[in-house]
Image 1 (cartoon, rainbow, N blue to C red):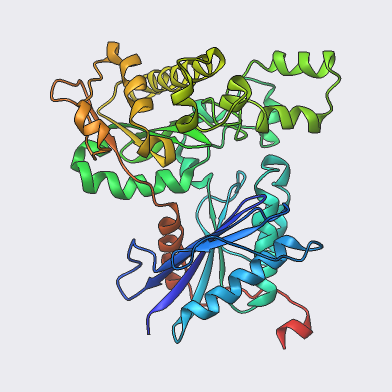
Image 2: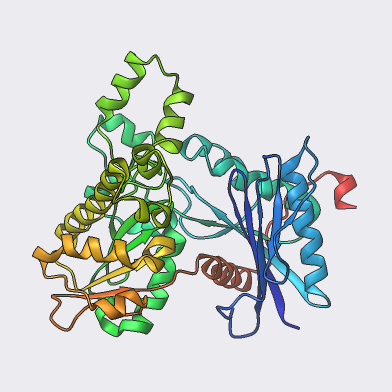
Length: 408
C-alpha cells in the first residue's frame, strides 16, 4: 500500500496543506492534492483546494485556528480514501541552535521549540498550535518538524556570529538564516538542471513577499542575508530588511513606540508597502511607477538592495558561477530580474531578453560572465521527502503523552 504524507505550512492567518503519496522509492515531486485556508483570524475566511474553487468558510470565532485544522482534517479524510496517512510534516520556522535535521516530535522537543517563540514570534506559535491540535487528533501518527533554519547550519562561524557582546552569542543570538526548505530544494534541483556548475559558486535568490539570498559552495550554505530574525537583509514586501538599529532606537524614543508597535512598523508597515504607500506587490506597483514617485523610489530601492546583497555574497563565494531566482517574484517577475541583472552588469551579468520574458530555466545571454537561471521552488515536497526518509529510517517514534481519554 502506498502511504500519504500531509504537509502543513502554518502562518498567523493562513494554513497551506498538501498531500504527497510515497512508495518504496520515495516521494514523487508532484503533490496529489492540496489547498489553503485563508483569513483564519479575519471576518471572511476562505478555503480552496486543487479540486475546488475558493469558497467562504465558517469557523468557530472562539477557536478559529483549531477549527481551520478540523476542516483540513475532514478534507484529508475525504481525499485519502483507502490509502493510509503515515505522517504529518510541519514547516517549523525556528530550530534554534539545537535542531537542524527534521525530527519526530515528542513532548521534550515541543518544550524546546516553545522556548524559540521569541526568536520567531510571527511564525513559531502557529506551527506549534497546529502540532498540538493534530497530536490530539492523531496521537499515534508521527508528526515531523522540518526547520526553515536547518539548511544554514553549515554557515561558518564568521558568518554566524554578530558583532555584539560575546555573551549574546552564548545566549543564542546569532545569524540563523531562513527559507531553508526552499534552499534545500535547490540542492536537489540545481544539479539536475545545471550539472556540476551548481556545485560551484552559486547564489540563489528566494524573492517573494519575504525574501533572502543564499550563497552556496558544493550545495551547502556558506552565507545568507536573513539573520537572527526574518527582518534582516533584503527589503521585502512589508518588512524593512537590514536597517540601522539606531533608526529603530530613534523611532522608539521620539515616537514613544512600544516594542509591539515597533515590531508592527518593521514587520508589517515597511518595505515596498511602507515606502510606496500603495502595495507590497511588485506586479501592482510596476504599472504605477511612471506617475507615482513614491512607487518609483520603492521599486528602485527594492532592486538596489537585491543587487547589493548579491554582490556582497559574491565576496563570500569569491565570485559567481550560477545565479538563480526562485519564489513568487523571482520565478515570475521578468522586469525585476532584468533590473537586478542590469545593476550587476559591472560583474558581467547579461540577460537573454526573450528567455527572461518567458521565465526560462536559463535566462543568461551567451556572453554573460556567469549562468543566470530561474528555478521554481518546492518547499512542500522537501518537507514530505525529508519526513519519508526520517520515518523510514527509525523504528518507532517515542509516543507523545496524551490524556487517557484521547489515547482511548
